[in-house]
Each structure stands twice: as structure tokens, then as C-alpha cells.
Length: 320
Length: 320
Image (cartoon, rainbow over all chains, first blue to last red; front, top):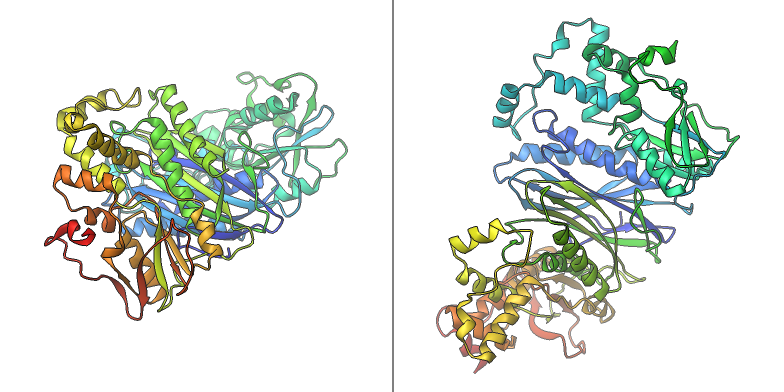
């Protein structure tokens, strides 16, 4: 950041003569709930999902600018919490909050724009996947969807109404979770996926790494793996075939699924908001262990999951 | 623009290794009214106020990214109109709409971020004004405030309610203005300031020009000349003294003031949203005719208007 907040505009370094830019609009009640997440968590998540878009181009995030709309009676401590969350998430990747704008609104709304640098590399788009290449994932899958399912399972109209009354003023509801009586191991696992829903952990460094490893296409998983791979398949004019046996269902996700009686593979394949990175690499590429090959590119169109039987067998079938 | 919409992020050229960035959040009912402005006008204005922030740094706007939140029943034609407005305003300066995000919201909200290039020049901040330098303005002053005053004068609860019923679906109310019976000359003038309120015309090229002419400080006039110069005075640690006789009150503004019984100098000095550029130049600078010297920088603090008597005398006093 060459010139920070406080002027009409900020000035950010873009050493290789290009800047990567992505924007998101986040609306209270649609993208976050004030009774489920603290201001700090909302800041972390708002930053994370934009910074992940930059990483998904193979770029390194450099700066964030944020427009914040909120009711006039919003507590200053809430704004401070949000700002701290934005700043801390940026700090994970060496980026800065370069500027912002405050506006009055009937509910909280965030306009977040992230900038990034390709550091001389070519951007990795959605359109470069070719038949014969392999599909690999880095980061978490299914955690955020599992956390959302647990939050929804514990949500009630009265709790929500009570929380709305104290919104923007304090911490969200934490007591009374149905899993409070579970074993410590289960409780810890369930807290982990709820925490992942509130504050995703995108594998930022894997974006530029994928570019260096020759990735031909990449996205961050924001809407669910199947849907996002559908965009790559469409833009590249190819068919993507996933092998469900290649996915490891992490224990916290599996335990959450057991808790609410869900199939964890649904969350792994269709859950959004973890902002894992999914990339397509040349056949024969040697990938570091944090990348898991989960499928391959073929001629054709669309996304297929081999041997996937969503209701019969369930996820244990694929682990055994 | 090196890579446009349709991927996780866009890639924009930043030839000199830096990018200027500014963001604004615009909320229905606060920053625009759907019964006063068409979608096209809202797009033009939303783009203009961000592009003007870039120009106010001495930079050339290169790209815009936009997050749009709106109710699910918003007409597609409304979105098309907005997009067209954003694009046409960008086209005035050779910039492009590089990307966007759509979200569901209870009302229309826009998160607009503009990028720009300094093309090798140093950014012109608010902090460089020095005693002995001169203050000059390029662009319109008082037009938008005059237009707002006319719109408010013709606004009634019932009209507003009726318009809310048809919002996002068609053109705003145009009939029934109290000045419809005025002479053609007056009507044209009044329409001009209303149009200026809906669609400001910032003097974009004057930003980089001011930088080339050695401007030591600059802002765009978004909140009113006195208030915005107060930011320059504060950031620079100087006092700014304006000479009200130096201001030309344009005829449309004068006629609008007469229509509603206002002092047009109030609008010129305190009206916002015209996005004129106000800059501080070294003493003795030779300025092109579209720059008007309106004051000087002294030691001290704050902003003073010499011989200004807001209520006694009025604007005619300063023209005679």
C-alpha cells in the first residue's frame, strides 16, 4: 500500500503492471446473520471470500477496500470488531485495508473489493481445462455446510427474535446448543465446523502455488464443488468426472452429519463457503500433499460423479 | 482491461506499477431515489462519483467493479438501465466495467469501486497545500444542490408513495412540475439543474491536468466546497480564504434559486454532488480558462469566506 485511507482514493502497488480485482456485496440476513456471527467473524469472512477470489486467479492479495452500510444506532464496538476482523484476515496474506466508505442503511451491508498481484504470472481462469488433465482440491470441503446445518438445527424463531433485539450490540447466542451434552470429542468437532462456517480458512498460498505448478484452470469453491466445477466445465468446454472415493470426509464433518442425520458427501460435493481451491493440472503433475486429486477432465460437458449413490450406501460406503 | 467479467476476478492494466482505488456504498433512499432518477441515471451518477474520486488524485480512471443488491422482483430492464448508465459514464473517460456481483436485498444498494492510473505522476493528496498558494475550481458548483431543492419543492407524500409503488419498473415522475408553466428559458434552466442532480458531470480530465500543472492538493467536491476544503485545510495544516466575488453563479443556478427563494451562493459554497474539482496551485501558476481561482492559502486553520454575508445582500451583491 503506497497511500492508505484518508484521501479520495488509496494507491496500491501493482509491480508487474497489472492488478487483479474482485468485488462482493454482502447483505445481512442473506450472507450473514448478526445472531450467528460476531462483527469480528463477519469481517474475517467478508475479507476471506474476496481474498480467496484473488487467490483463485493464481494471484497474491494486496489490498482490500470496504464500503459499510449500517443503521445509525449500530454500536461503535461492532464497527471496531468488523474492522479488526477485516484487518486480521488481510494480515494472513500480507494485504492491507486500503480504504473504505461509511453509509447509513436500514441493515448491515458490506461492499468488499480485493486487489491482488500476479507477480508476473498469467492469470489462471476458468477456461483452460483440457481433456486428460486432473482435478485437485486444496483446503476444506463440507465444513461450512456442516456448520450451517448445525446452526439451523439449533435455530428457533424465538431465539432468532431475541437475538435480533440485541443485534449489533454483543456476542451472538452461544448457549443451549443441543450438542452441549455430547462427549468432549464430539463437541470439539461440532464447534469446529460451526467456527468454519463463521470464519472460513481459504488456502490462500495454494493459489499462486497452483499457478506455478502449471494449473490450467482454477476457482475457489464458494457455491459448492459441483456447481463451481460446472463453471470450469462450461467455460473450458469439457466434461469433469469426479471420483467420490478420492474424497476424505474429515472427522468433524462426519460427526456433524451423524448429529443431524445428513450425508456428509452432500456437504463435501455441494456445500459452499469453505473457499477451498479447486484446480485443473496437467496429467502427471507432481502435487504437494495438501492437494488431493479428486477427478479428471474428459471430452464432453458437465460434471459427473462416478459411482455416486447419494442415498443408498451413504458416505461410509466410500470410506470403507 | 486485460481480463473482463466472468471469472473469479478481473485483471486491469496498471502500467506504472501502481493502482489508484476508491470505493463507495450507495443506498436507495439515502443516495438516490427510485422515484427521482431512472436506473440509467443512477448508474451514471454512481459511476461518476467514484470516477471523480480517481480524477481528484490526479489519476485517469481505468475500470469499475460494481456489487448490486436488489429485491428479487426488480425488473430486468431496470438492471439493464443501470448497467448501461455505468458503462456510458465509464466510456467518457475510457474506463470499463470490469466485473460485478449480484445479491438479493430488501432495497437497492450499490457497492462501486473505481480503479485508476497515475501514469507515472505522483498522487495529489489533500495534504500538500502551502501558504501563498492559490485555490482554483474546475467544473460545476451549486447545480446539484439547486436540482435537489427543486425536486424537494415538488415532492409530496402522495407522489412519493405512488412512485414507490411503481419503483424499479419504469421512469420516475416527470409531469406536474410547478415550473412547467414558466417561460421556456426558465424551464430549460430548471431542467438543467435537475438533470445535473440526477447525472453530475465531473471535469474528469482536469484531474490529471491539475497534477501536470503542479497542483499541491486536490479533492472532488462531493460534500460541498466549504466542507471539502476544510479537509484540505486540516490535512495540510493551513487556512483557506475564499473570495466570494470570484465565483460566477451560473444562470441555471440563479434561476433555480429565484424559483424557490434561496440564496444561490449557499448552493455554490455548500452544495455537494456536482463533483467539481478543487485544487491548490503554486502562486503564479498559469491556469487554463476552465479553472477559476477562488481563493488563497494562508497560515492558520479552517476555511473563511471574505465579505460573505449569507443573509444580508444575497448573491446579487457579489455579482454587481
